[in-house]
Image 1 (cartoon, rainbow over the protein chains, first blue to last red):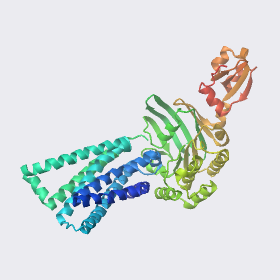
Image 2: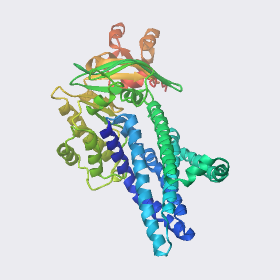
Image 3: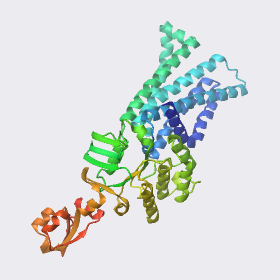
Image 4: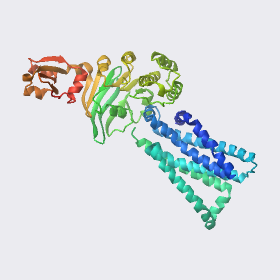
Length: 216
Length: 286
């Protein structure tokens, strides 16, 4: 099964190649935000938000080329295609955050900004959490409604994220556990990691269910 | 296993369209033409065979295996061509080759290159830069390159010029020569079928009209012609379709009913004529 998932990932990667420039843009452009605000948190958040929006590309290409028929003839299960696409999107996220952090660190160093470890950690955690939340919401939407209509799902995580930004500081004052989590990198790492795993798991289950019932 | 494809009591409904109780069998080593007017259910049947659409009722067996339960296993031995390209338009031929070879263990790059040369497909171009005919040929080359046991072609000759069509038909005849391969071939160009098909399955308005040997199908019907006065109520009743003119008429009748009309001039009917008359399009008074 694993080898089929990797084949599906490779196929999706072959579709994405034509968008290499756009994907690089999502990595390089946010450096300006970082330099403007002298904060990695802004730059990384922007980079990961932009990058999550590019998760629609494989869906758009398939729609534009009527490629669902191609996926339909290949000797591989629909669930494996879905998992292959998730794997590519997760790999893209890992690559984007790694390259973005390195580039933005370099950019800040060049302008003489001293970046602390906790700033890198919070930028990293915020970045991967944002990316995972966006993509976990978006992908089932794309499978269900296609790449254009599915974009409305982009608003849900945005609203959720903004709400969290407002609610968290208030909660941390009232609930000690929240305050501990926010101030302890280890706990924060664990919370973010578990949340991401749960979000992707639910998202994958929904996407697999949608595609298995879908008629091409 | 002597049958490569068995379709039993297949039914599917969506919206106002109903495909009802479709039954046919394609034995190993033969070509079957799937015919019918637009919207009759040919592509739906093919998509049901490929499990792209979910059947409401019935059973489909390919190589003796269930088309849903053993889908992956079956698809290794299936070659499929649709009426328009399913490859990414931005891909070059090398990308098509790389992708296909990843999924099919039996993929033969030499054979693929041979077909590219035979079809004169320019290898440096992107898929979207190829003409529709060339895109069809590319799908055919890909389908042939992994040596499938069963080829399923949905309107493959639509974008081909007469020379390429002739070449494809020749290729299909060669392909089944060893008795180990079969072809299910849906088409509007029924002249192609008269040349290569061994079996015909005719679907009209979602219902099976006929499935069996091509010769049996063509022997079943005759076109009768006569003057207006010869169009009797009995003939109107027996006729499957009538085309009336100011001076006379043409009608499609079953060969077995011919004996009742000895005075009429009877001719063999082409597949096209059978489709036209049985689809009620023959009823155009002039």
